[in-house]
Length: 135
Length: 122
Image 1 (tube, rainbow over the protein chains, first blue to last red):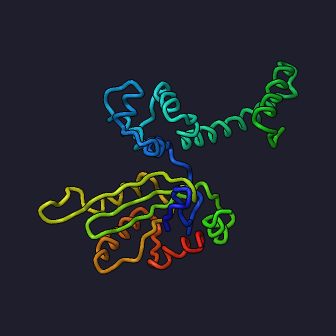
Image 2: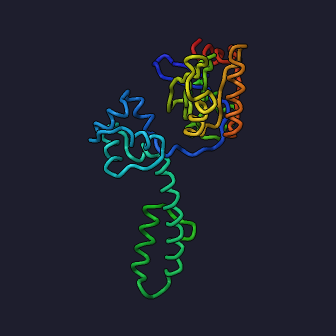
């Protein structure tokens, strides 16, 4: 079930699973791995009280950009990884909107007005977000 | 390939190794320890909680204490070692909580708990 391997790392046997989403954030995991207390993290991020950080760890709210970047600087882990679930959900939303924008632009493609600009946008979408089905 | 991954892939090759969360509990008569894994390599959280009775009884009983990691980590599975006579009551309570959270519980015999270890490091 739970084991410590010869490198001192924990491992487990995985018996069962369903596809699941990542957690909204992994702040507690990285903090506990570092051995720091919430109070110490609060100090490092320039706050006196660790209570708000406890709320972030319990996913009761999202920290400000300044605090999020502070976490990145403290744990040396990118914000996108610390807030993996948030990032996934933002990615999904943006991807859906990109598809919609792409479809709209495809419709305008043959219109005389702003043809060049539309082509530039479509080319950018294809380049940055991969070729879309409708293009 | 790590032994744990080999075991996992035999069961369902379509699943992502990195996304599954498992809550493993070590139940004692007056306390329990928990570990949360995401995938076979990533340790998310760990700790121990007491639910002693009598004069020094804790305010929060076993049920809500077990419910907390279930709420926080939404695991796909709860792993427990098969209960002895002293932990049967606690296991029943944990199964009740897991049922409320719609998380399946898997009981392992003490021998099964030790078996992968012996395969991996023999």
